[in-house]
Length: 287
Image (cartoon, rainbow, N blue to C red; front, side, top):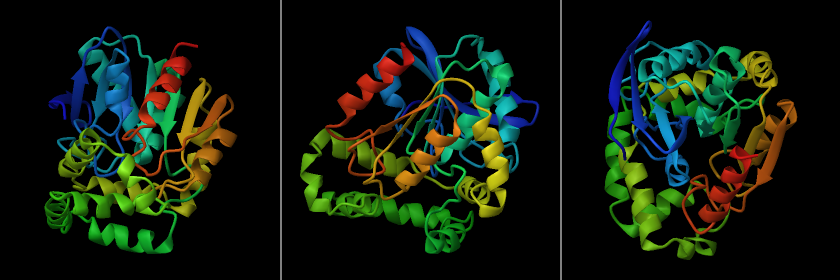
């Protein structure tokens, strides 16, 4: 977890976390249930020496701009960069539900984003959530009214290794006994910290709203307009986002490269496969 702060934009306050680096920063858009300071993969970019400017998307953390869509929020990221004096960006990076936001920022030519990186992202042009049960229960279980209670329960569950194993097993399509033993003590500590940082606030409901089937044409218009080189990563063993979304992003974005990971769960940056992914990211950014 880094330290977040609030900046004031034309639409209201935006919560960010900025960690300077020796190399130009990436604009990082966390996934669902995560605010700017939640490390859902930005540590890989910091490890490579890049600065990290992470955003709490609309409805998450201290961002108070109303229920803006990803396209509507994109110009505010430019305002934040101007306030921080950031004029050179290495890439726009999205994780899971943050992918649509990263794509909108990259598609906006005024942002001058040279690369887009999408890790296990959804929705693509396909609707998301992937199951009808998730689509029906998500807005209820993670509603602003119930979400604080739900995450309090989750924090209690992940205190033990058995509880953490249970929570992570839901994010994989593989039997948990095939991969749990590959996670070391540091990996489990990192995963536990991630779950402890999570809140849905009103952001998750806003995310779900933008993944509906009736908005496919709107998403396709934005995703297809991305002109910069794009790296799309995903795993067929991801229990949180079906691999078909990675394929769809790669097929829709004109200059996209799809890398299939062997990550055993949706938390793709934790585990022994991390080193190879960091190397892949580094090669792509420095092409």
